Length: 582
Ligand code: SF4
Ligand code: SF4
Image (cartoon, rainbow, N blue to C red; front, side, top):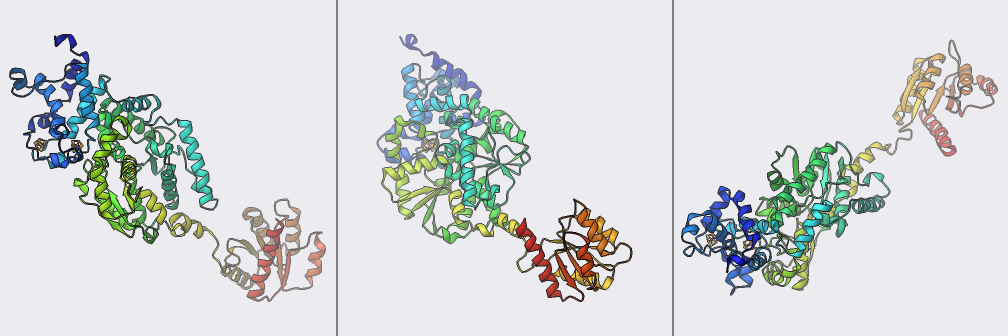
């Protein structure tokens, strides 16, 4: 009778399991002694104390049954002794689906509390992968997987919508910084120092985080870009257990990064995105990781430490606490960097307890937010997290993970906590002292120094007498001008055409071509006709001569000896009048 109901899918799962039986996986399958020490580690057990099906060992035992029945001699010979009765019908697989997807967020807290080193979360992910490959999965997982395969990101954000979002964020940013076009987000810029990748949730639901990151890159005067495709650093393969999807998503990201010839791939704050991009993706795709990848948290710390951005932590004075994302913390050892940054940008940071490896899951992990059928159980299990948050007295829970933002927001709403959720990028942007950041410092340095009236002006000083020429040049240079000198008429005409000075001080009495001739030639040439010319002469009698030399008069006239003040004031005035005319 049993054979009549035997599921083809169950048989297929056995076949699919074989290549996944690495030494580490078999170690976890065989290592459990059912001591129960991990039970208290699991938020599902703590909130469902009377349900033995919530224990980590029960969940992992579902895979053990398949393994023992088909791959281990004990199960083949003595199935009853080792409980080697795996799923055989489609109904069994439905039950397995609810266990693998609905009672575990793959948070790995139990793993860190197992004296035998059993990695229950990995076993659960393998079970999810087997089920997914035979088409047994929650509807939400099916939809997200389809979007990932067909559209290229897990939230089905179309490339044109993504680009449009970046465009309007750019417009708002430019306005925010007083019209500086440099604040616009560069897309597909080649050879950038930073290629910034995001979670699609940011483009779809939380563009504020893109805005804040872009503001920080602008403030740091970073040479950065965002890709037009291949921008999703998240990877649903981690949650669904589908290694093929994990590999394809990672290759997408890698291909675009290499096409852009970027120097450093920066991953926005997302726990599973960081883990799958930096740690798992190259393994799933069998690729050597040959370029630099880092979390944006590390990037922001570097900007502060190097003085590229200036922050004022008193701008974030509301009490904050920090929630460790399971993927960032337990799976990647990313504990201290977020705290270092938080202490730099917030003045009242309170640790949540327990924390780091022992922190509890936000309950939205493992793709749980996409499986609405399990929401009531998830929210019941969230009581542990709600108690942790409430005990801190913080008004903001900071986390470096978009998944946790959604999970925690749900917890806060459900348990009516007086708190909101933010990410580090929001706090850093909020603490920026823009006027002291690299971009503004650079622009200020390029501006003329206040108090130097001729800063940025180029002046050609024409005089055959060394004393007079050096005097005029020195006075004008001290007033900020850039000086070029000519000692005779021919040289003056040549330099005027080549250097295009803002103004020429012109001596009249010179050997060879005198000032009158020089004046005439300059005014007669289309290249130099409009140049400002101030005659500086020791022969006042030439004034009438030169005034009669051309219909156009000189822009100024000074008799030697001229005082430094009169010289600077006169030249400055001529230039100001010219600026106004232009
Ligand atoms: S997984 Fe480890 S801690 Fe949990 S029951 Fe098995 S041996 Fe004990
Ligand atoms: S991985 Fe997390 S949710 Fe899953 S059984 Fe272990 S402690 Fe519980």
